[in-house]
Length: 354
Image (cartoon, rainbow, N blue to C red; front, side, top):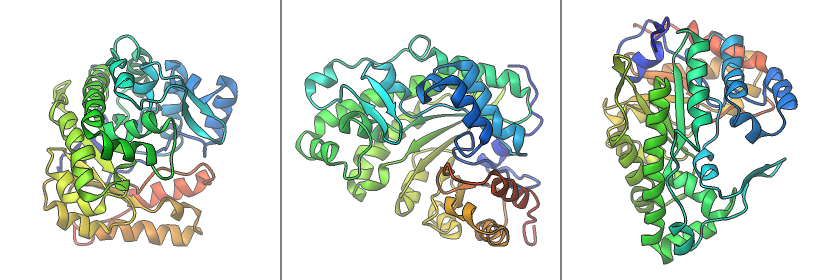
């Protein structure tokens, strides 16, 4: 890709380089809270149809960047593309979330799984990445992503979303070796998948460990963090003449931020349950931090939203290495005007004494 990046604030902040202001992007910034997204969805049909159509995925990726002065685009996709490519019968039921027709629960089920080839079964993703890079023409960087091996495994083993994670936790206690076998396979698939996104044009990548926080500290290290470390260790670090930063985000992982920082990632995402000043102490300058406004603050009256946003910015303190984000994704019922106010507040922020 030969496009010159006109705004590289995100990449610099993720590498803890000084930036004139804090960069901002938002998890799930491309999605259901935007009327243009809902119009595209009506035209395209179901959620999977949108993810697997590079032209539509590109259109949706660009919608929030066209509407708000954000500092990054994140690919419109889903964390379940890898198991979808493993032919487990993934469907998204309205109001129900993802469901797998063929859950993975026995050694024989794991035996049947192969590592998908990103150039074949997941080509629609790499095509979408290339298309977005072309369309962005260097306006802002593009972030690629994948689910963590543990998080993706929860859906595959449970057969969909879960409140108790009883099936996978039972497997963890009864057959830990089999669960590790599944997680190893997913780690291999995730490495190939993220590196293919980088090759196609992603300028930063993120691992979403949505369900790491349901584990005990010892289980988290063994079943989630260990396999994320495998992925981080094997990622492509340079592309197009510059560093490709990576971000690891465990929802509910505030107590483990120091351990996450130690796996060699460039940045750690922080949910809204940890103060950024505490997070900064925990990671001891080893990584950049991303976060961490409570997504529900977007329902607040404008003055309250502005105050909460400034509070998060202040809590990080002076110095480089902060990317402003929410502590988790935007919810579908948010007013886009609130997002506009949030972005404007971050962009206008002056670091005290900085």
